[in-house]
Figure 1: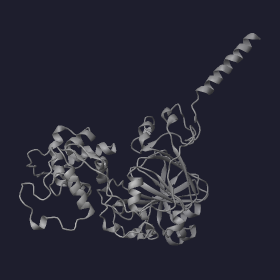
Figure 2 (figure 1 turned 90 degrees about the vertical axis):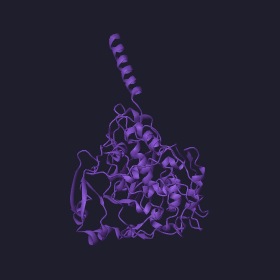
Figure 3 (figure 1 turned 180 degrees about the vertical axis):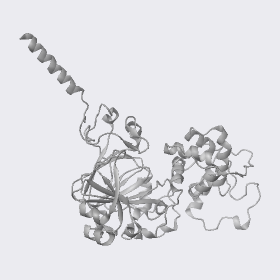
Figure 4 (figure 1 turned 45 degrees about the vertical axis):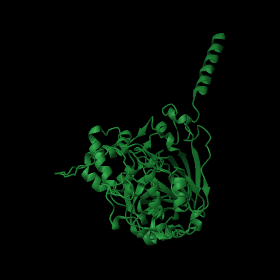
Amino acid sequence: MMKSNILALVLMAVALGEVIATPPGHLKPLGSHMDPIGGIPVTGKFPSPWVFHEEFVKKSQPLVMRKVLERDNIPAYRLWTDKYLRENFGNIDVEVEVGKKENRMSGLVKNMTMSKFLHVYQTANIYQVFDLTPEMKKDFNLPLSLQCGGFQNFLQMVIMWFSSGGTKSHLHHDALDNINCLFDGKKELILIDKKYRHLVMEHGWNNKGAFSNVDVESVDMFKFPQLQNIPYNRITINKGDCLFIPYKWLHYVDSKPGRNLAVNFWFHHLPWFNSSDPECEGLDPYQNSSIPLPTLKQADPDAEFKMLFLELFEDVMSFYKRSFSEYMQREIPSITQEDVESLNQVFSKIDKDGNKVLTWDELFSMDMNAAIEDFPKLFGKIISNLTGDVILFDEKEEENIELSTEKNPEELVVEDSDSTQDGGQRSHDDRPSPVKTPDDLEKEKLIKMADDGNLVMEEEPLRSPHEEL
């Protein structure tokens, strides 16, 4: 009898030990390990482009925009009933994924007409995800926040997500910023700040697909121990809401049951806002979206590589260390001393005015295709490092690249703004206009601040007093 009691006590102790040792959230849905944190701003309108960039894009800060579609001018929000979609786009081929729980490794994607999808989606285990066709974009205007400053030139995709609800995504991050607008239904999202990416990626991360292999419905905390202490935000958006998700922020999307229709505006991360963009002149920050999507130019084919390259220089808004080549060698470990001459030539090509100071208007206007064509090995290293994939660019059969003739190209030497590099006076045509733009004044300030190869760069000019969130 005593032996049986002892055995029972031992079993109870073992069981109790197992309970105590089980981490919070084990085998429960993602986000069960702790309470969510707060701190996501909420507004009732699309911010003006300048405010959107400075307060949210630049700071990598998500933003919830409540009921903006109810008050804004995006026709599709009111038009896109199932009947309208069938009558106007029924013959369009759409991409459909089989299985409402996302599986990027073995998920089945097939095509069907919009009409057939509308016939079966309420009962079938499928959801629709595809880039809007030109015909469908006619029902859209570009959200006010993206109408100028450079955003409008780097809109990459407008993606439609459509299901009867119940879909669940991977925990993943994207290489693009995006505004997710919900036309119908309800979504719950878990957001994890990009500063915790290295923790999430410690175990079970798929580099090629940029997602975690964790089961979002039943998290194995022993297999993914790094998730136990990661803080997160939980956001719910409803019909008429939009949510800005900064690039590289990890997120998981749970679409609740019921007709669920969302559209994502995907755009390349904009590290610098072009305050002299003519499209910004006279822009009313309280107006509705008014630029039809079909009128926008297609983003340049090299836009993705260009924006990845520009992301290297986000910190230039605060500081710029010694020389371009030294900065690049520090940021891209695969770049060697042998690449320095190529880096100096790249610098000279970007430095259009020859004053040996790179400003954002020069970086932004660089011809990425020409740079890759002239320096395929160098940019292969740079882009491979930034993407995590091996990128090889074709070399020209005969490279005829003019070598730099500067004595010390690695040094930042700033000439007087009223003289040429060789000390001669500028021609009349080269002299600055008597009427200087804010960007002209900003460039002069940057040149004056250069000292012994170190350039400290201040913030952008103060915003207009009426541009408040």
